[in-house]
Length: 235
Image (cartoon, rainbow, N blue to C red; front, side, top):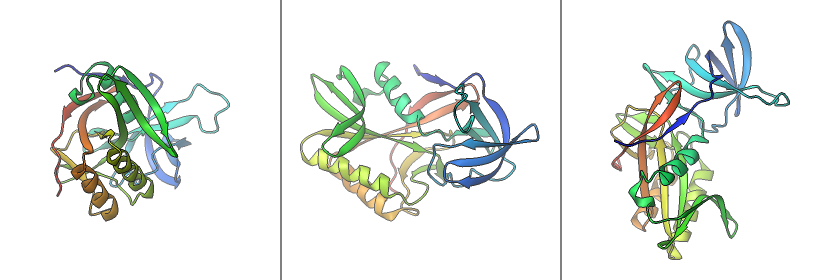
């Protein structure tokens, strides 16, 4: 099966997770030396961030950056889980470029962080088929082999789904690209046991035309590969 891979920086180092100090800062140890690292994941990372867990950090080449390290992967039950929330947008564009997601075929241009009215959508594809608006979500929670999003109550995620419904109601084609950055799942669905409002909106959006493009990944400490499409389960 043809696939694409996002390579992780060559300067990544293994570390041991100790604690989450603030929303975007974690504390870790590299060879027993304490370091603070940035995480761009605002979710809870439920079940992943436990003291003593092995993690993978990338190091920035910018000497002016306050925190040199960024959290990329967490080791869980013998496999790596990707927690960098920039990866889904990058994977979405690569999948479009390599024509790996059939639903994205027929569009000639890809615009990231596209603005429409007061909203900013992760991607807008344009071509002979018209426009397609796509939101990308990073999924790191799995319960009973079902990948679930979100991993914490998220007003922001709910707002994005409302925006998708508005666009769909105006006649636009819309989709949610859900990238599951771990291998231990058989299907994908909204986490109604964590955020009932989001789950309700997600199902309503799907019933009104929002396409759900959920994909599994294969992750190694060198990179993240796009896996197969997952069926949707409503729990």
